[in-house]
Amino acid sequence: QVQLGESGGGLVQAGGSLRLSCAASGRTISNYDMGWFRRAPGKERSFVAAIHWRSGSTSYADSVKGRFTISRDNAKNTVYLQMSRLKPEDTAVYYCASRPNGGVDFGSWGQGTQVTVSS
Image (tube, rainbow, N blue to C red; front, side, top):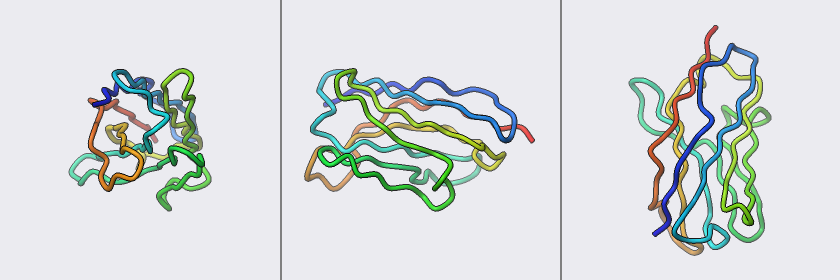
């Protein structure tokens, strides 16, 4: 099982940027799809972005496309989410998750990091 820990959240003004990091331990993430999800106040957890374990291909929720970029550094066992042009509606707890290659579900989750965007 891979253990995940997010960092980099905080308070930022609308239009600003933040970079979230997700450090993994226990297993190398090179064999895992990695994803970012978020839970906004009063809402269900939702998908934000994912990166394929082998090809490095990425996918994004429509709401963040063109503003957020997911990347991975397998040598550092870390995944990143670069967030730009932030909006108040991006305010949420952001979670990192992993899915073994060939797996169906994201089974390991971090504890989350709070991102608050002020207007």
